Length: 216
Image (cartoon, rainbow, N blue to C red; front, top):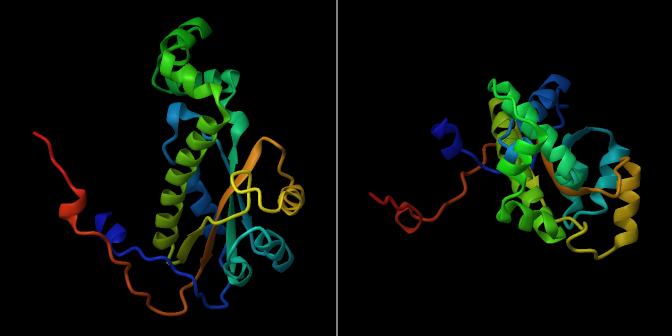
């Protein structure tokens, strides 16, 4: 897997060949299987291939041309409501049950939800937003690697006018309404997909010595 990761590059130019539906489903499935803090899974993924739909979504991005020109786009949506206490408890119960552990609501709260750090993180909208973006970022990584596995090129497009930037709130609200997103949901990014039009150069990275440490 490290070979594929090392050879990763963002692809922004594609052929006109459509992306098969089964490949889109496989990529979204990879995002669904991504690690998620306490199994919260605060995400939804919407595959878009229609020209009108891509044009509408592109209105909210600083480089909308990337969205419009791509054969396929996966709209990545974070769900802030996923952090509600009852939902957290249900997700934890499913996670524990999957390993053969049964806990009461009271024990789940005591063990996972009532500690000071968990309660502090649950109190502010900024921390909930940060935790949502953290989980979404992990899902992006899984999806772009599966795109490579499917023989596709991909690029994460994240500079969008959403709740964080609020440059044109009315336009953003129109985009959310167009894609049937509610007030608890936030568009976090889009992943453009297609068959690469040429061979692309792998992006440079900082030297290992500037990044790696091993403490013994």
